Image: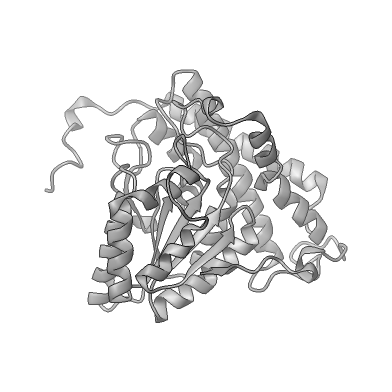
Length: 353
């Protein structure tokens, strides 16, 4: 097991802004492999995902959305890993139910997200016949057939095996929470992938809670990544609250997976909201713990980092937030105006033609 390298002082204490010209780098010491535009786009994406997540939570309280599992606190891990995969250009994704950022940033619009959570015509994954955003989005290379904890891991490994048999060079990213690592499917998937040296990157978003069960009551180890050794492949601990470190670790993991076999990335994150809209985390988490977690909120730390770099100003941040809020407002209005599925199409998407 290894520890992902933190940003060095050279790349975390940024140079001053050198200009205002659009299209030119305004900073020095950019992380390897990333441009100024990459970082700004990641911030825009992060804000849009957060605004969407917050709206879903609010609409649940209004009785318009039945349930939602917030990704607040997980955004940096998800977006950093996705950025590395998109740069690679040949990855397939098996996300889990908390991966709103992954699903949106591979191509889903805020309107499609709202349609899915409200069960309206135009829902992109299953035609509004399953849990929100559960099914398949093959256009964007995403599959999440089941909401059962850990179920997507064996499917991801099977996809990787099929790709190898067809001669593909695709690397599969299989996402899960720490609770999933206590399921039998996690062992089966990692063991099979290790034996056959399959091109899979297992991404464990460890927020230290399996619903209400803390990590100390799930497992007798400190790092989930240490389990990888038992399957014969590398495990890496990553600060999942740091988008750049998440990107760098995933980039290296994809290279390793394609040439040598699986990698387990343990993205240490904070869950800033209850498990789902049906949960009350005040029953098992203290106020002090939540306050400390919010100090690490990527929507606080990432823009501060960009301002250190000299590529984001307060005014630009305000404009990005306003733009995202406007997009979410438009998406909400469109979804509320949309119709529910007609009963005549009940069996559509259920049976093969």
